[in-house]
Length: 384
Image (cartoon, rainbow, N blue to C red):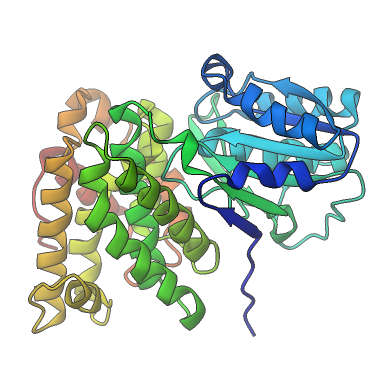
């Protein structure tokens, strides 16, 4: 037995006006200082006022939010006692909002203790609205929460099906003027979500169509969205990211996340850039398992795929050409990471990443993970 879970998704121009229909007393907006400076919290607040709600802004979320940030935010939330929590921003802000909301409802648990096996009993105090301002993570429609333990240089993936948002508002107004550096990497994140959800061992018929649509949209619009003034492409990539996030929430990620998470935690590489960089290498590795469905994706995109390996080869070529076009790195070395420091961190990254390999069609052992990390540093094709 399987379940398909989704928030109410409100999308398109003017979607933000959905806030004027909610009922309550107070809203607590979780975001960061940059978005406050851009006036996004004021924009959201104007709609909340139309609904008759007071609101407070918590803007202390950093990239890759830490466990301590979540604890502090939950404490502030308890002091304000909202009946709506609003995550406004990219994946970091939205994940922080999810975790803070859980701790607000359940002050007896720690953020790293959130899991899908325990009944949390949420929505006794508040409900959750998510509003993405970048096009990549899909955090607005999934139940996963990625937090960082800075002392251990480790990302922790937690979450419960109960902490899925009640409403996700996907309004392109937030992304049409984004700087180009905030467009490219997150776009590859969306592509990674869709490809891995389609090829993971947890794939299913209900998520498959979402995966394929998201893949098609990314290849059609990502490069265009990195050009100044292409508002249509920005809008379509915003939808692609949500579609891919919903697909992965109802399937699962795989090896690109197992390698990207520890790289990001240790060397502070943005999530989308990290997983997008590893995606072609992990496809090259995984195709050795046999029936991986990469040929089906290649067919969808109009590329030759007379066998699985040819399909994977052409898919990898297409991903790398797209990454080059949007000026994203193709190797770890291109990130400017020192080789000696990288090798010294390999064991930590392997130990952290191996817990995220379970849904891959081909699961690497530690020696294979070490080799894959090193091949990706050099930009070398996987041949094992």
